[in-house]
Amino acid sequence: MYLSDTTEDTLCRCCTKHVPNNLKTMLVTINSEVVYLCPTSFYNLESLRALYVHYLTEPPGSVRKHYSDYIQMLAKQLQA
Ligand SMILES: [Zn+2]
Image (cartoon, rainbow, N blue to C red; front, side, top):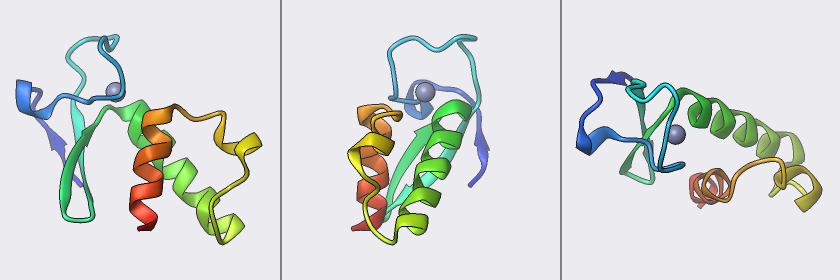
């Protein structure tokens, strides 16, 4: 993981508009695919990943619903 300079190639895809706009993104490798995440998404992914460890499987929907569809998708890919 490292902080990247913000360019068109290193934008976070969690939403279309980040505030503040020029957030540095973190590079995360998911199944050898590179994904760039803003600080909030990075934190949320780490948080949901910890819940996968806690539940030893996919957390129940009542827990996952607090995370965006994008983060849920990435967390699921991390388990694959
Ligand atoms: Zn983002």
